[in-house]
Length: 132
Image (cartoon, rainbow, N blue to C red):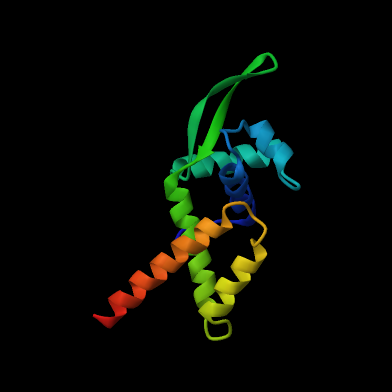
């Protein structure tokens, strides 16, 4: 599994949460304690590992700036990391506690009903597969 440091995780989180590609300055302004030099170094590494891609070029004042977005590969890596962390605690916290905690945390989020419907559908299909 690819190792990511806290700053790399922060930049990926910012890019995933944005509804549009961001410049390095916008990433700096969105993050806690991120500097321009740090963000540029992180972006170079994330570009090299294909976790981030250049999505375009925009005017930022009198300067042209590249805009960046997270790739599908980065979501896969973040999911793997999350599941690995979860795996470390599975003897303490069971799946029902994890899922109920996640659902309670998002209970006021728009669209949660649709997600619950999708989960029910998935769980029913998973249960049927187990019976085979």
